Amino acid sequence: MKKVPYRNQFSKVFVFSLVVSLLFSVSLSAQDAAAESADVSVESAEAAPTDGDPAAGKALFNQNCAACHALNRKMTGPALANVESRLAEEEGLDREWLYAWIKNSPGMIKSGDAYAVRIYNEYNQAAMTAFPTLTNEDIDNILAYTAAPPPAPTAPAAGEAAAVTAGAASGGISNEMILGALALVFALLVVMLFLVNNTLRRIAEANGISIEKERAEKRVPIWKAFAQNQFLVLVTVIFLLLGSAYFAYGWMMQIGVDQGYAPIQPIHYSHKIHAGDNKIECKYCHSSARVSKHSGIPSLNVCMNCHKSIYEYKGNPEGPSAEDLANGYTNEFYTKEIKKLYKAVGWDEENQKYTGESQPVEWVRIHNLPDFAYFNHSQHVSVAGVECQTCHGPVEEMEIMYQYSPLTMGWCINCHRETNVKVEGNEYYEKIHAELSKKYGVENLTAAQMGGLECGKCHY
Image (tube, rainbow, N blue to C red; front, side):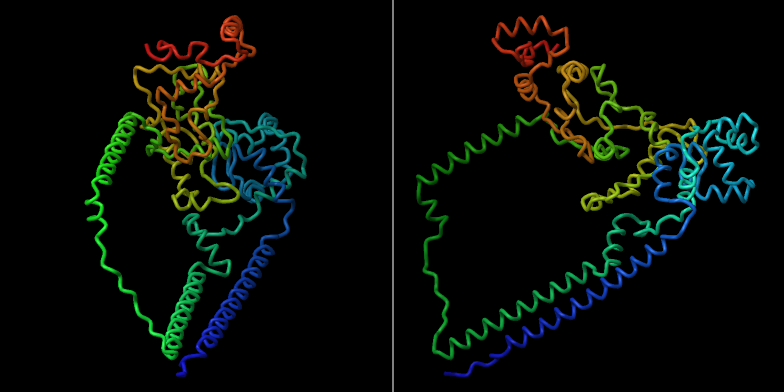
């Protein structure tokens, strides 16, 4: 038997790959340890002693002050970052003055306190709410929060996409390193398989075993065999004609159906944030749905009820999802959309007042029924008690609003056939419900049994 060369290459390759893996794991462990020590140093640096509890102060600030004040910008009231030190240096006012002002600002204005009157007139005589229930300790905590340095940013201000990259790098391991290691392992496996194949061939040749490729027998091409079978050709033609007719009918039945239509609006409005994360009720913005045929487009002053104070989007505590980052939905993106709202209504952020220079927002309509179809929102929302999601789908999960239901005649008729009318506590339905219940022999009546399939209900 012939001697097979390269017999010991398996062990060499295995030892080499093991050494590479050990070196890679050691480097990762060192980077993780460095990252942990850096995190500990940052936490120790942030834990600076203050007069009061900044964490408790933040909760009190958000609960009592955030509606009118921010730390670093003017709102309904002045900015409150380092307010105690600023008042002490500029006005000579101490903490006792702040206790009195926060607990009873109207009283201090009436007493003629010079700075109280000045700040009252400077901010359009918008009186600050008195907080007599706040203790001195509560106020100390709030002042500690306003004096605390801002937390160190975890990412560059370029956006959350950069934050993810910086976070991966600061964590001690990068995606490039992982991909490089995987590519190296894959290359080693390929080399090993090549060596195994080469060695097995040498063993076979040494034992006198010949390896030859089987020659494929000449056969009739399948297309020629198919063409020669008339029965198969006839069945295939019939099948193609029936299939084409089916798909053509289905396509024509979709004409005028805009299910899934999701136009781009001039101002990006996220129902997922407003109705989902913030739990804002649909009828707060679409208030006319209760009493009118149309649900209506909210006027921009409804938006400004909240966005006078919400001037930037700070996101969820857990941060944006990978899907949001992939679509560009960062905190900066949403904040820019708020600025578009300010431009449309003519809101001056700096002076906290309207300029009178407003611009119309050309919203793109999403749901649109034919002119010959009548639909009344109030009849369904107020009388029937139908939830908005029944027709519009899970709005609280939609980043971009789209037409969820087909809104076809058949879809409406099916709903009338399957939906029971809610008659509890509704005197309008008591008599007609009693008579129709006897007629149909049922306890619950559907909208169809109440006349919901009559042509005049929807067409006039």
